[in-house]
Length: 372
Image (tube, rainbow, N blue to C red; front, side):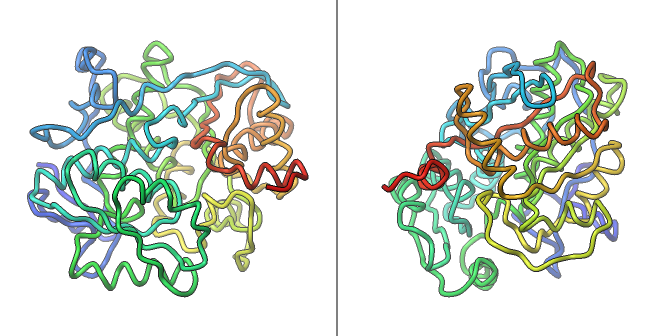
C-alpha cells in the first residue's frame, strides 16, 4: 500500500488525505514502488500522463496541457558531445510543469479548490497556469523586492500575487504561516511534485530506446530534478527495465550551492547573488535526500563561478539554444566533468536544460552590455 513517507524516520501517513508535510512539518516523499515496463506506457498520450501507470493514484481527469515529451538534441559542447534535454518546451516554459500537473491533479481530486505557493519564478508560473487550467484558485507569495516583470506570467493566469516584505526565506516563512488557511501546494514541499519530475527519468529511458544514459547533469536548487531522476530511474531498476542507475550530477552556482558544497565535503558559505537565480536556494529542504541520490547513483556535484555560467549561457545561445543561465550551468558542468576525467568520451550524457531564455531577457542584456 503506497503511503506518504518521512524518509528520515520511516513514519508513514495514508495517501487519501490532503497533506504537504508530516505532522511536525517534516518534508515527505512516498514509499518506494516498482516501476513500469514499456508495455505500460499509454502511447496515445503525448504528455507525461503516458507514464500514468507509474503514479500511485489515477485522477478522474488529469490537468494537462501537453507537458513533457520534450526534445532530446545532440550538441557539441566544450568538452565533448552531449544530449540536451530541452525542458523549456513546456506550456509555461520550464520543467516545473511536470510537477504542477501531477500535484494539482491529485489535489483537485482530493477536493482542494484553492492553493498557495511561494515563488517569484518558474514554480509560481507553473502552479498559476495549471491551477487556472484546472479551475482552481491560486495565491502566490513573492518577495516584495521582486521585479514586477517576474510576476506577469502568474498574474496573467489569474493568480493573486501577494508581496511579502523581506528576504526569500521570509516569503517562505509567510507561506508556512498561511498554510493553516489555504492549502500549501509548494513545489518544494509537496511530495507529488516529485512524482511529476520523476517522469523525466521515464522519458529519457524511452528516448534512449529503453536504456538508461550513463550520466544525467541537472541544474539544482531545491533538488526536485535530482530527486525526480533518482526516483524514476530507481523504479525502473527495481522493475528490471534498466541495468543500472545513471550517475546523477548536480550543478550549482558557487555563490549559492549548499547541496553541491555538502556533496563535495566543503564548508557552508553565506549565499551571494547569482545570475543562476533559479537555483539560488540557500536552505534546501531535502538536502540529505539529494546527497543520497548522488551517492547511490555514483554521481556528484559541480560548483560554478559566475563567469563560467555566463560563458556557457552565451555559448549555448550561439548554437541556437536560448535558455536561462540557471540551466546553462548544467552545460558548464558537463565541460568541467569531461575535462576532469569524471565523464568519459564514449559515455551517453544527458544535460537537462530546464527553462527558456525568454524569461531571462534582463540577464542576457547585462551579459551583452545592452540597455533595456
